[in-house]
Each structure stands twice: as structure tokens, then as C-alpha cells.
Length: 394
Image (cartoon, rainbow, N blue to C red; front, side, top):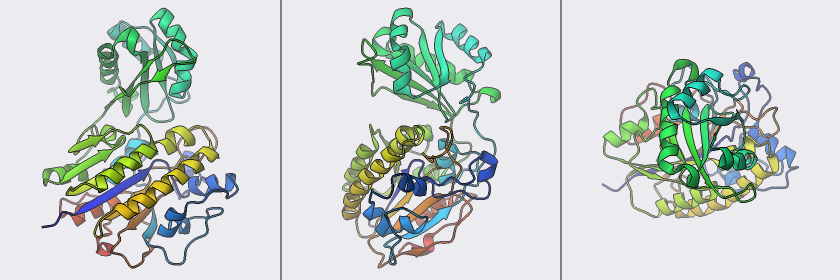
């Protein structure tokens, strides 16, 4: 039997508008995709996304809707509680989260947590606030080299991050410290989704640079995912970007790291040229990390233009019977207040060269419709949530 392949590409944080629960998160009115292009006065074009139907989902300044989209297009609401990266991705693959991860964006980590971390690791810590990783090492890196204190910080996500100089501490010690932090933050009141080691090099604030030796210490998904079902059935599950970290390696048969979203798309194109049987699951994080959290609409729009160019190559590379999903995991409206994610619906575009044309899908109540479709298509165990779109897959 000929190999069958599905690609699921997550444009991290590309929400397409608020829904009825958004007011509970202070996000009523948010619309990441629409507001990006309004803020940049429609000067950027995304022709490949437009022809697939992305611009039929919401107003996209300078990119009118198309009458004959090549993909099926629709919106999905989040069924889980929260608006976190892990919550969104887990729901895409069939897991319902009923209790959100703890965040420390506004307060930093409590003294009790820091005290226990210092006692168990033997290190002192500085920082302890929400920050850009590149900025905090620029601000505190020289002090670290002088005093030997490690840098601890968080973000709008449920994360505890430790930045430490590779030459001064060594990777083994940085990782040991993060493993201890992971153990400590398993307590319910400090239960963060990920502890992240952020090694860097350099000798002053002008040349500090993070290295590729980042390591994430995540928690396992709270239930069986579609990735697990695919792997158990003998299918390939190829992760690109931070998918492997988000699922704590569970259900993944091959993991590919990315240094950027552009590289992530290049890697996806290369995988599309290979012969595999199963799922390629891709996360493109720069939209969220570089532009959404930093409230940079112009940067976000330019990143979408770069993605759109690579998307054109991917569309040409796909086989006739391949299925491509383009989606997101939450919103992060660069025009919104603060620096947090925004609770929004996500887009779902479903494309195959075998389609003569696409069409509009009903708005559904769970991100898990994507995972349910993948499971249904490969005839593996269906998740307990999500409606399958298999009827439109040729």
C-alpha cells in the first residue's frame, strides 16, 4: 500500500478572532491576523495563504477574500481552559485541559520557590521577572560572570527559564539545575508547563549569544494523544520545531529542531521530499516569541510574508494525495494590551492537490477536530474530543 502523509503546520499564535469565552481572559475584541494587517495598513501581501482561504476567515487589510479557495477553511474554538502553548497543542491532538498551567508573568516566582531552588542547587539566582531571553542576558549576563549567580526568568507562558553561561557553569551543571527546578515545580501551586535551560556564550553584553543547547523539561500530556496512537500503530510521527518539547517526546518517532520559523518551513519542505508514512507535525514559534509577545505588528506581518513564500514551495512539493493542515495554537494580538497570549479561535485550512476547489467549514467547538481527522484518516484510536473532517479528505 502506498504511503499516506499528513502535514500539520502550526503558525504559533495566529488567532483569527475572539469568541464567547474570550471575555473571561480579558481578550474580547482581540484578532491577531486582522489587527496585524490593519496596523500595517495593508502593505503586506500573503498570496498563497489568501488563495487557500485564510483571508476568508476575517478581514485582512490589503488581502481580500477569494471566491474560489483551493482549501477548505474554517475556525476552531478552544475547548480547554487557558490559552497556553501546551494547552493549545495538546488539544489539537485530542487532550482536553480542564485546569490551566500556573503562570508568574506579573509577580515572578515566589520567595519560597527561589529559596528551595537555591538550597537544592547550591546556586544563587538573580532576575526573577518576565523578560525577553536575549534582553535579560544582556542586562544581567555581565553580573553573572562576576558573581556566579544564575539568571531565572519567566514569560507570558507557563515557563521557568534559567539562563547560564556555558563556559562558566558547563552544560551538565546547567541541566542538573534545571532538572531540580523541574522537580520543585511539580508542586500544584508552582506547576509550570516547562522548565527551560537557556545556555549562552560571550564575554560582555555586546556579544552575549544564546547557543543551540537549549533543553526543555516539560510535563507529559495529561492523557493519550493522537501522536501516541499513531506511533503505536507503526506510523511515522515527525516533529519539527518545538513539537517534541511540547509533548515531552511522547508519541514522536523523529524530532527535528529548528533555529527559526523560516528554517522550520525549509525543514518541512525537505521532509516533504522524503518518503515517510504518517504525520509531520510542525511548530513555527517566531510569530509568537519574536513578534506577538513583543507587540510588534510589523515584524509579525513580515514573518507571515516569509512564511507565505516558503508555503508556495511546500505546496509545489507536496504529492497529489498529501493532506496539509495550516492552523495555530492560540492568539497573540500584537496590538493588544500587555504581552500575554490572547484567547482566540484558530484557523484551520485543509489542502490537497487532489481537491478541485475547497469551501467553507462550520466553526467547530474544539481544536481537536484536527487530531480527530488525523486519527480517522489513518484508522487509529479516535480522541475523546473533536469532530473529524475525514469526509472532505479524498
